[in-house]
Amino acid sequence: MEEKDLIKPGDYVLIVSKKDDEYLVRIEEKGNFSTHKGFIDYNLIVGKPFGSIVRTHLATEYFLFKPTVYDFLRHIKRKTQVLYAKDLGYIILRLGIRSGIKMIECGSGSGSATSAFAFALYPDGKLFSYEAREEFMELAKKNLDRLGLTEVVSFKNKDIEDGFDENAVDAIFLDVKFPEKYIGHCYKSLKNSGNLCVFVPTANQVSDTLKALENHRFFKTDVLEIFLRKYKTVAERLRPDDTMIAHTGYLIFTRKYVGEENE
Figure: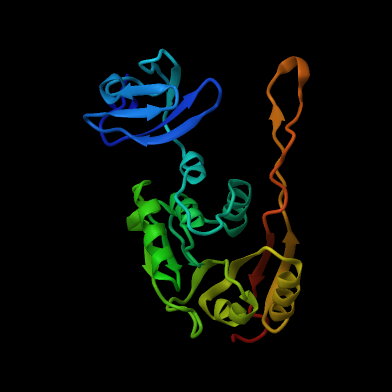
């Protein structure tokens, strides 16, 4: 077994009970982690392989899993509404986010999208993340630091009223209250054939954005929303869960073209 598969101090571990109570915990050299079913000494965790089982002092079993980006996003510290994985995965594919490209995000919020984009951009991509409110930007930085991806992101605590600092970026993700005000800025900063995604929660914002897009050379515009429905995992009684993640927001995707003349 490789050393990277063994839990060491400083690692994050997803600790999950059989009843699906779960905690994202940074393991320390000393001390313990406390749950409502008892505590677990860190020295019982350090050195164990990811995927092991430990017991609290009350003999309750917990599984020790290596967290994925999905797990980090579900346990993100937040001051704002965050994007769900169901939206983020699709956005990453549609915008072509990958190592080696440059992209802009506005705004950073609590850092949910920032973290997902940085993971897709690592190691050779670059994300320029704009956020007007400093307290949100600092929280996004802390959440990103847990993933060890801070070098991929350049944070900018500024309003985008006068546009972006960067030009010829491959993609832009816009999550602001009045996106129609900034479509022109997006057009100027995107490279030819660059991709734009706008995320808005209400239908009237979609209409305002579509009208703004008509004033610039954008094509292949789509508007959509994504629903996620989980199922109860009992083989003899397979059926949907009683609740589902339905509407979280509308996604508007479009591409820049240059036509007969450069603008």
